[in-house]
Structure formats: structure tokens, C-alpha cells
Length: 205
Image 1 (cartoon, rainbow, N blue to C red):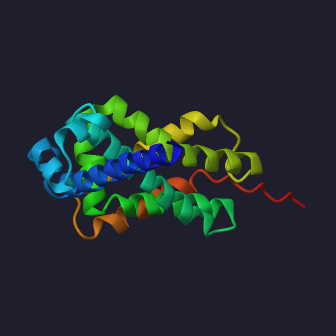
Image 2: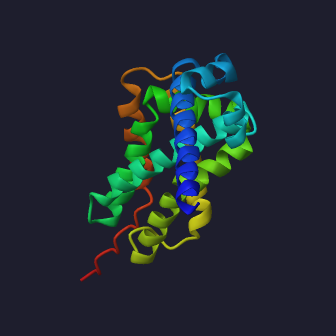
Image 3: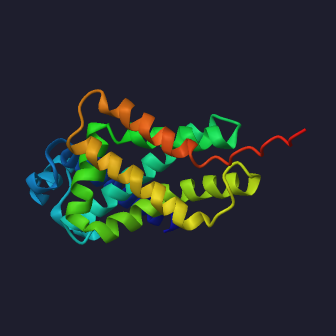
């Protein structure tokens, strides 16, 4: 009985994976509004009842796809940061990777275009904070503790920087041209450099 239950659990997990994979493909290529549940069910090779076993409906399915996408970006940011031993380089590499991810057409449509429109800004922002913004907060806290960034409350600083990067990402997704990513990163890098603590002046002789 236990073995049979394990097989059923794996079948349910596999169904969920297929639904997420096919939904993500369809949402990314055509957008949330142009994709119906019947098409998702057909592409996934499952019944509508199987879909409703896992998700309450199309919006709930999209929420799961968005969460998966945001977690993927969070992993990319963390991996980019971890390639560097220096905490400051970790911060800048993570920020740069976040902006680079925002130019990926698949991620753009799901995470930046449809995400806020389908779920609303508040829920989208809360999901973004859980997936990516915590890495930024942790990095800034470490830099403040090390004296690389001037002593200050970390939470407002993290929210300000996260808001700036999200706004830049939304702009890159909607209106940017081919050279705008480099220009956006250069502007963000100047903002980040301004946070570095000014070295103490040498004593006068």
C-alpha cells in the first residue's frame, strides 16, 4: 500500500510539473490573456479535473508559474554573487544579474509585464521580495556591518534600491532599446558607488 501511495504521489507531482512547464511556455510566448485553460490542458496532456486538483484556476496557475520564475531569478542572482569573494563585488554582480535577467523575453513577459497586471502590484511586490529582495537585504547588511557602506538602517535602503531596480527592469521590458541595458547598469553602478563609505581623511601634518 505504501509503495502504491508513493507512486500516486509521484504521478501527482509529475502532473504538476508538466502543467507548470507547459503553462510557462504558453504564458511566455503569448501572454496570460491570450492563453485559455483548455489550451493548457491540451498541451499538458491532462484532464481539466487534474488541473483543478492542483490549482484553483488560471490565475492560481499563473501565480505558481510566476513564483517559479521569480525563484529562478533569485537563484541566478545568488549564483552570480557567490562567484565573487568580496562582499561589494557580490552586491554589484547580483544587481547586474538581476538587470540582465530582466532582458530575457520569457522572464520579461511573465515576471514584469503580466505579473503585476494579473496579480496586482501588492501581491507581485510581496512575491518579488520573498524571491529576490532578501538577497539584497542580506548583502547590504553585511556591507554595513563591515563598514563598506556607511552605518544606516538597512531595510529602507534595501527597499529603495529594490524599487529602483524593479522600475528599471519594468522599463527595460517595455520600452528599452538594444543599448539601454548597458546604460541602465552604468547608472545603477554610479548609484551603488555613492553608497560606499568615504575613506577617512589623512591627518594633517
